Length: 342
Image (tube, rainbow, N blue to C red; front, side, top):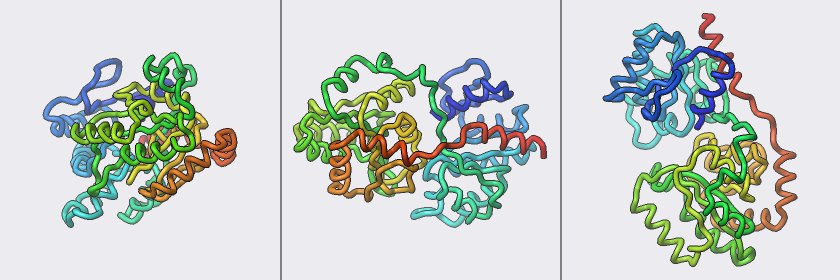
């Protein structure tokens, strides 16, 4: 999502660039799919691209290390964006000394690092990057307003939202396990929904699913839905486009994200941008305006949501009061131009 919008922004600024697409989903304009095997294509493209600056978006420390070697050989300036917990995981439980050393080496040799939150930036400084080579920038570029609206929502989902009030919406992947825990906590959401409906009996929960890592996990969640008597209160929406997801956020009342770990969630930023009250876990520091509860604390989560649903206009007004303006993608242009000027 972030790459798609950054692509559009750079085009709107007439800034020359090539997007090398690791997922090989499209070939158009200046988008070039990587070849196969992917890792060889990564290295070859970095070595041979006519670009003088390479901006790397990956969740794998191994790729960061190899990209650093290729950038050095190809005399490229490397910008590394760190979006989620991958860098921290490379220094956590289960990591090894060689992996930590190689990752540290790569990060220290980047021309610039873009961290989506202060914690990632602090880790970069701990690794040894100078403060002036690390920029904190949430990975959020909003869609134009004309690409968001109820007409973009699939008919079945639109009917569900219209017949449930209030409506909650959460987003993520089925079966994403990090440090032995389910990241997106869909089962947790369902247990909370069962309790919320005792006071707000027409509450509905929309689950926007980006994908399924484990089909058995998905089936377990759907079985829990039925066991809790929530078959008519939960709508699962799979694989929607960005504009559809944002339209659903706009149509629902509250965005929820009780994750056990996170990066700087683009989905959460979308909801905040659309002035939707948000209840989130404290797994990481969250943006201004969120209502934060202890990770995994079902009672606290239900209590916060109940209070919010009791007076949604007040919750929306409080969100608007607390929100602060964000820096935009123009920061990337500043980084690129500073490296090109060196």
